Length: 234
Image 1 (cartoon, rainbow, N blue to C red):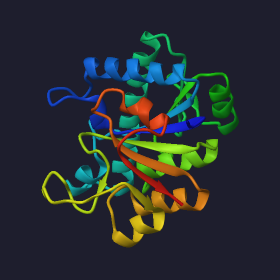
Image 2 (image 1 turned 90 degrees about the vertical axis):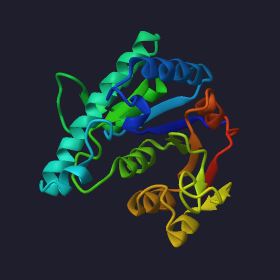
Image 3 (image 1 turned 60 degrees about the vertical axis):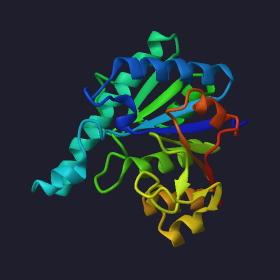
């Protein structure tokens, strides 16, 4: 069982087809994360913002890349606050830290403070990405996991139970990998995380587990190393 984990959540994982944020989904997630905390694990979370805005889509409409990325970072802060609210409704003590300072709504990211929160049993939710454009929230997850000394990144996917050699939603013959090295991912061009994030995990020896978060209890199973997904290691 891992001692300190970083959970990467996409923005879409918090939403429904009808709503950018779905209260029922948030509540179910919070209940599961509370069970995870009760195992004694130290839990940090990085959230995406794709349910509100995707930088690539905005760029395709003619907006400057830097401006689009900053807009995406603000979307992740909205999601971080939503996850915080859902967790605290279940009695889980949390702190939100953002890479862009906005002290009326969250703490600024300070590494030593984040680690201290984890040691005290609080869930730390990281928002606003890295605070710089041209970096994805996958890279944020790799960076924060490396900084806080996490044992593993849990990459929660919607409806996909691991890494495949092609898109299983489009190709019924797609082959699933149970274990991979980071070099395998880079050499095969597998779309798990962007190459910057993969390289950072490899350089800092942080394991990665890709699994389907839509199956109830899978986050806790991933923390215990028992989930049926794909494990990527050095």
